Length: 470
Image 1: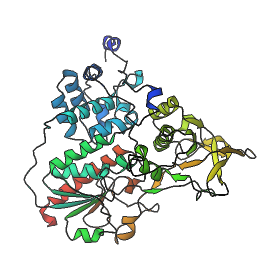
Image 2: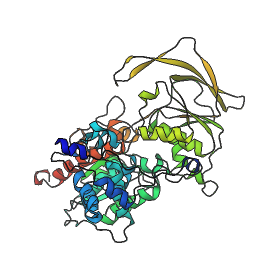
Image 3: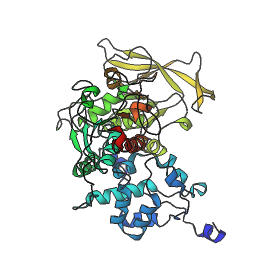
Image 4: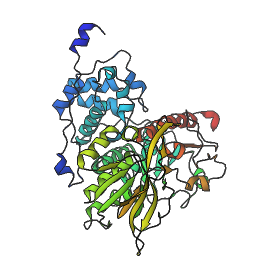
């Protein structure tokens, strides 16, 4: 890069319009409003179109990032969408919820100058533009291979496998335990961060490609993996991490204590925030504590705030160690969520009727770094204190869904209850069974689950089209 080029660099990312704070706190509509066409083209023109695009190397689903960005810069949105969707069938989703700052944007050559390209926002723009078109361009599907694939779980990993395999001519059926497809996209992420109409539009795209989808079907109960193997040539398990964790303290059985899974599922999938228009009531709480510091904790806190509660996030480390995306932390702070850092709940206290009335907590201080690289929190002796709450939400993580591991003989299981699968291919110890996403890794990001799905689909296609296997 010449000195003249450096001087001409535009290091100012185009800001994305958002709902005003005082307005968005009162509704569940999407906070970030997205780029207009003019803003998207202006942002895309900042891209240097590098000869060695490091952004692509850090994308788990291998998107041609410079390719679609250059199309946006030229105003050729149709071709850009075609490039984008050749690798990612959920671009509007990924553009909203992926941690681009750690992945593609983190590889941008402009990072060192603080002016990285807003790749996620551009991906979102292109995905939304394509979804808005009446006549969508569907890829050509090759003749049927005659092979049938079953996918267990309609979340990000399963949807990615389905998209890749249907494009290779295989017959694909997704079995989803809940009454809607999408997995964590529909039950876990709030409407104000990911509108469900966006998820449905991208799932509908897969239906149009020919993917069959069966809901209310609990594999491991309705049928086992072994039963499905009698009907299908290969199976992918992407059943997620649906077993919530609770802090180890007395009082978690009190009324008003929730796991993040239960709380967000009631609100998002069951539309509790629309009650009484919806059939799912949600008890109104006045003072809510959310234990945890990740994106799920931010989602719970911002949801509780919109339902009228005075909301506090309790986190045992400092703000600097928060694992949540900076954007989500800043949104929560702007909206009025309180943060109580270096604090650890040790006891959940209840009233005579069995309802939670508050938390006994202890102050923490940071010691030496632990295995995660973050400084380990250490309790300050004698620093116990009480905080009054009428609801407590545990948002400290999840374990892999135990149903498939418990009902599938011959499937190697890790010590944390996860299915053991080859990282490069997704193959498990059981013949003709692949796995990927949170059921393998434990709770992680949407894009990492999709990346695992991409690898598994590639391996499954090679297996299904290799004559020596048949």
